[in-house]
Length: 241
Image (cartoon, rainbow, N blue to C red; front, side):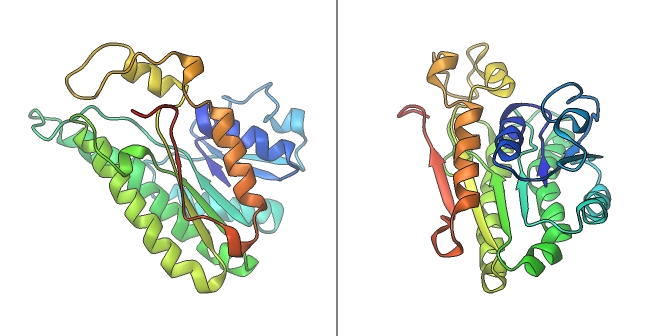
């Protein structure tokens, strides 16, 4: 199961997983976003890929997606959460920005928590289930004034640590993937103009970590034996992230 597979890192991970021979259940807000691509069930084959409507803002959608995946494939062994949003809200937020703080926490923290909870019984049943969470280096060190985003990612990393503890004896292995600048639409929107809210780097797209690089890491993690799965993978494209 992969969330956020319509673009960016999630899409690259899904493409690599398909190439590696995995069967995929992709949760998408827009079911037409993959139409005609290699991830389209009509292209890849309906026995290889299923699409299900999923929004990180819909708390009930997680269980529905899990149930649909089990009905379709019989079981699954891995959950990869790559859906997330960026926020520029600072500590001294403006009146009315409380809603954006809550939305950032809901999508970046609560949604993957609910999704992991829904997927948990299947991961336990498998005996060596995997959870990969796309966190961020912003979940390890806060730079600039991105309070809402950093807080959501710090909390997600803490959740990953507790998931690791809870699932260990049931064979579940959790990895927090923490990249810095990745060549995605989100990164380009952040770096488009100077701002007092985050450190601005003059990174060229080709100098950033590429989504395909993260996909290769995800792929390698899924191939490791339970005794060798790292909890955390930090990825830097330069010394300043």
